[in-house]
Length: 599
Image 1 (cartoon, rainbow, N blue to C red):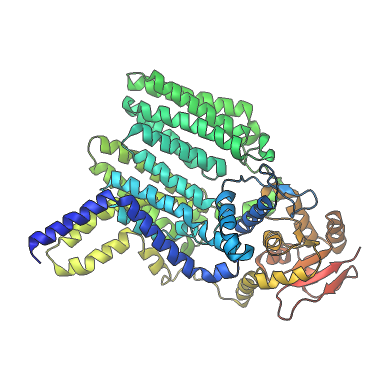
Image 2: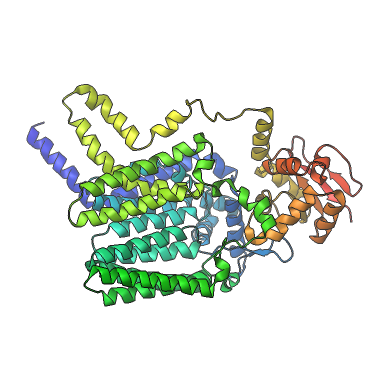
């Protein structure tokens, strides 16, 4: 083959990568999705929804398909008979429900649910891949988008949110974040503003987890306008889409319970903030003073007015959005590990999460410094957004998936600068060994490889830890809990973390799940297990509980043993018998223990 033929083939490949990038992203997504489904097949087969939110999501979808009102998100199988209101919306329910209805005629309801739970989380992954590819094409090179896909696959914390059976809302919010980056990078100002505004409104209509990122993106758009008045069209369209999109999301998806001024969802409180902020940005863009000082003064005045209006109209939302009691915060919410700063976590946990965000921040900083003209402002916006995501890790560890996703453009820019230098080196060892080594370093892939060999924070392998791990894995299986369905439907008093799984796998009801709007019931379960037998009996009677179910050595059980020695659970687990409890036989080998509560 001649050099001319080689060049023609290279040119044809370059043309395809430039022209058909979106189709190629979708082909890559299909291959990745197929592999994910194959590798997670055991989880599909046994309906392994290990997270409480995923179990609750499936229960919510079942209620919708069973005829529950669209705007009624009360979960009646927890805290019966009244139930309790979830702070979610139906948006994420829709693709799961649609997949179940589509597959049910072909495979039956049980397998339709399993397949829907496997496929649904892969859908937002396609959006995220497309959004990052779009951004990288604009920021780095039209040919660099394959690296964005590859780097995303190496984002361990992010990819967990797209894994089959991870059906909660985090994947869709991460997809919205990828579209936000694409909008910030878009050279067509109106289109970019619309993309950021609609993505933010969509994410907020799902939940408020990404509110800080939405606020950060809005602030960045405003700052770009302050610096360059030519950015007014982007800001005007962004403000209009944010206001209109939020209003539409509230009208179509807000539950009855979210029609009151609560602080934990897109209620009238935050809807008014989105509408007011969007309207202010539209007004500023129309005024568009010629002098930068004037634009800065108007932006500062608008921000102060918005803050003052929020303080005066919703003072109850200046504290924690969950608005839980001090006791519940002390005993439960303050102890949620993912809600703690990353520096409070063991090194083995924190290091693989933070490495790529730091690399992405460095790459974005270098790319901003190297950029010229209008590209510097675009990279500057991405740099600010990346820095903000890294700072969020100092607030909560749960910011890890978002921080890794937002690090991809900067990491790709760094790789696009470094890898060609190693490939063009005159030294063969640098070309052959240095290139893959540079890729492993720039992508952050080395973190997971290195951390397991470091002599720090080695995981304990005590007998107690092994028992806790086994109990957590075995007590919530479909085999263990499914055996309870031979009994007629009843209300079961059990652990808070076991409640969502119980109502998903059986026809029984439970008292509580780990949700702040269920706070009184959570405290009742804690008091029932932690106080004396008489207190347990009184609380169980108040909730109409007919059965008591425990999983010895489950993580939550250790809290009652350590925190409340001599309490009801501690005494029960040590073998003490109580007259008001009648043992109920379970299949041989069951990790669960069950009693009937006598009246």
